[in-house]
Length: 452
Ligand code: NOJ
Image (tube, rainbow, N blue to C red; front, side):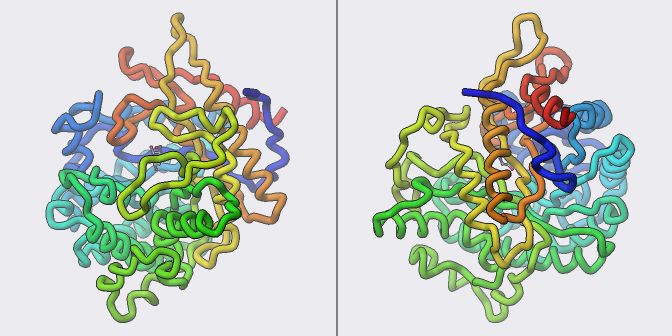
């Protein structure tokens, strides 16, 4: 495995280099300044998230200045964060919490002071617990409730934040339902998954329109998608072609095609037909919204997984290279070519003009060197370098992709997996006051971004 450097100049001056994180995963301070509990705070309190109790995140709430300085010192120009709905709107429907908003004012102002462009996601999974108890994304009223939040955020922060993402990975939001992992709902909830999908599509478009109406003209409204393309990327036999198309339709296309005016891919996956009972007159038109950019997030190909409900068996053939057999700490096979295929697949989709890699990275079982000096994380360096090569290849083919965000700037709470898998460029020493220690991958980025 080689971890050689890359030529930053090859990406051009307008390319955005950033790091990404999300509110629940880093902030901590779950009760500070009038914040209400989210579904994830509740899970943490009930001991459902390994290693994470009342003290959540990595104390970004208090240490954001130190973190921003560190991110800027590595040479990044942008920082992607998310806003916590229960911090801003208590139990979900308001009133607006000025103290919660003041926290994000401080964060955004400080980013601008140290030279980081804020990229902001409105919803990165931390739904107010109260809203969830009332039915979460299954209730149709959530569409307007979410759009109210998004519009209010755009009004409040839009003078400083020019890059917005409405959702983070709708596939994951509904995927938790599909595999029965969602908050307090064990088992398989296919109808809930279909309803949720439709409501999220409608909410994304409605929020996008309302945000655009109040944002300055130089602001951009995007969204993000996780794109786990099925391997083999180019199957030749008819049966695998059909299976690949059906799996990608259920996992990805249902979240993207409606925005682009294509409706739902019923022809590719008959399993989606029950969705029709949730679609009302005018819905398909209301779900259309041309985003300014589509954030793509890809952590590896879909291959060799256990058969899933609805989706069924995933093709497992052609697993040949050593890299491909390498797995992240959460079991994702490593093959950055998946990112190239995802970029190609969504290159000229009617839902968005441009693509940005809003997340890429590797979760490992990193160990701090015995003398506490750093972390040797060659696999992470290899992953980012190969991802970036995929971006260069895609650009040379005319794919309009103009940014890359490393997930994540520092180790944090990996949802149901807790503090186990570490995705950071920076190690967080939970035993020593959450000290931040740059790993080799952070130093690799610093050298590359210095562009010597
Ligand atoms: C996608 C999610 O957006 C992020 O929250 C998560 O930590 C990473 N993938 C890694 O699994």
